Figure 1 (tube, rainbow, N blue to C red):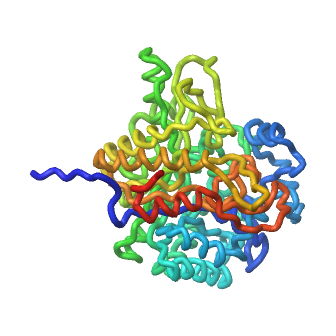
Figure 2 (cartoon, rainbow, N blue to C red; figure 1 turned 135 degrees about the vertical axis):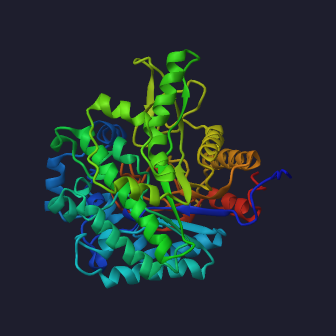
Figure 3 (tube, rainbow, N blue to C red; figure 1 turned 90 degrees about the vertical axis):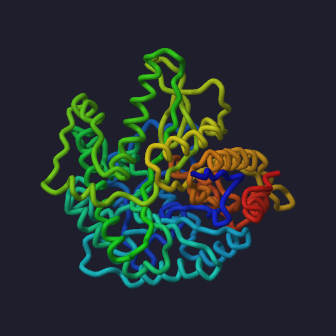
Amino acid sequence: MAYKTSSGFDADFLWGGAISCSQADGGFRDGGKGISTQDLRYLDPAWDHEQVEAKHHGSPFSKAEFDQALQDMDTTYYPNRRGIDFYHTYKQDLALLAEMGMKIFRTSICWARLFPNGDDAQPNPEGIRYYKDLFGECKKHGMKVFATILHYDIPVQLVLKYGGWKNRKTIDFYCRYVEVLFRELGDLVDYWLPFNEINAGRFSPWDGVCLIRDQEPHMDQEIFQCLHHQFLASARVVKMGHELLPGSKIGCMIARFTTYPATCRPEDNMQAILDDQYSNWFYTDVMARGKYPAYMNRYFDKLGIDIRMEPGDEEILQQGTVDFVSFSYYFSQVSTSDQGWEKTSGNLIMANKNPYLETSEWGWQKDPIGLRITLNQLYDRYGLPLFVAENGLGTSDVVEADGTVHDPYRIDYLRGHIQQMKEAVRDGVELLGYTMWGILDIVSCGPLTMDKRYGVVYVDLDNGGKGTGKRIRKDSFYWYKKCIESNGEDLA
């Protein structure tokens, strides 16, 4: 047989950027939108960095916070209700991204815009119109659409009335919502993603599965029961999409936690295998292979977990395997049996520190080669096309007196990771595209602040939502534009 080698990205490689509706849109109650679970997350704009981090890592979402947020319909202490006002500015923002030459735009759809309570008998026509206009605007600019169906954000009434993902009824409500999306927006969306970072249910339960820790006597049991319901929902959506939209591409996504053994001790190597299974492979194995992996039996026994399955669940999973695998990648970590190992921050988690890596301003370990490793591991395991759905550097930026924003640190970060993506393609990995996270500055998911910025476009808003809202092209904007124009060849 003839072997094909590649020197770089295919001509149709999809260079793009990503945001989420809850972090960007604003328009809190506009257009008939209901209240979403992400609308309830609290931040005091007067908090300093240490207080913000203490809340982020040390104070899980509580029942008291939930109750208070439902009473308070103001936006002052709830940054996700403000976002960056993308709901009203999307035409200008998409024009900026088109100026950069972006080929694909990833955003999420707000379930509560289409079904304000989640269980409404009919969808909200204003919500449908908004997404037709938004995705139609993408098409006008020649951009493909990568739509995340659920990005941590369900109508809060589903939690109040049914218990959210604990209840199998939520699967039916979700599938009804998705059927409306397929029928109304199917001709405008190129790639579908049922769930953002589905493993978040484990490491960030309020975000991932809408559970409040102080209300669950057996948290582990409820997390994995909710995840089972999400797996079923994903599989049903894949099958439905293939029937309603022949040729549609529907994938899965995890927050990828690339891990290395801390030492060559056999115990650390075994721990790395287990950490990979429990943090990463379990989720993609179910969605890409269509069944629960055997290694989880021991894990479930250890935690006293008994997944309540109904007849037919296994068949649903087998019939709904995905077309591609996507993931977020920001950092790597190490695995060790040493309980005293130094920790550092990561994507909504605390991670074991790697002494060979530099860290960002927020403590995230920068590891471009880890992205190549991840791409090779995923492609070798599943043989499915891959998509880097999120990658980027969250850090502080400064607007100079002349109105410019110089961010060489972001350019260095992007350059390193794109170089390693190219190496993975040369390794033989089938890589569809790359949607850089937070292409416009948005409310950061973990700390809920604006000062942790990811974008190549600066948005003039502070942690309290004050500012002009003006969009400013950073140096990285022009660098990424050049990268896209050269299809990843010019990274200088």
